[in-house]
Structures are given as structure tokens and as C-alpha cells.
Length: 120
Image (cartoon, rainbow, N blue to C red):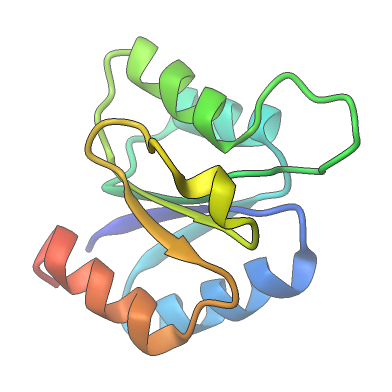
């Protein structure tokens, strides 16, 4: 079973994506911010991380989506990455190997990307 971490500061986004992926047979964890996500990445190995680029805009936080990916890779882990944002400028110059999607994201686009990255 493939494992996916969904990181988004919007509870509705986390819930919809989590439910849809679980229905397709993925093992899913969610995190509301980069700090929580990094803690999960220390404990678990994920095949894929789907993260919002801007986590809690305007709020003081150590990790946005990009910094989270850098920190995870700094742990010696190399999951596939999908970076999402409602701000197209945030998607320019993505981290190496990351796939970008602009919000609003359709579930069909998410599944197409998952199939391309994970083959399942």
C-alpha cells in the first residue's frame, strides 16, 4: 500500500483529499502545517507528499511547503512531491522533482498525478 502525506492549512482540503485517496486504497496521513508534517516524516516514510506551498499565509511558521520538502530531503528521505498553490507565482521554480498543481485542484488531476508518480 502506498503512503501519502497531505499537508494543507485548510481543513476542508485535507479532509476531501484524504477521503478520496483512502477510497482508492492509499494509506493517508494529514498535517495542518509544516512543523507537524516534518514530525510525521521523522516517524514515517511516505511515498508521496502533497503539500500546499503557502502554509498558513500571514502566520509565523518555520516551514512553508518548499522548506518542508528541503527539511524532509535533509533527513535523507526522498518522497515524490506534489506542490499545490492558489498563487501561480508560488509554483514558479519548484523544488527539484516536484510536480506543481494550481488550486483549485480537481480530484481527477490529483489521481492522474498520483498514477504518473507512483504507478498506482
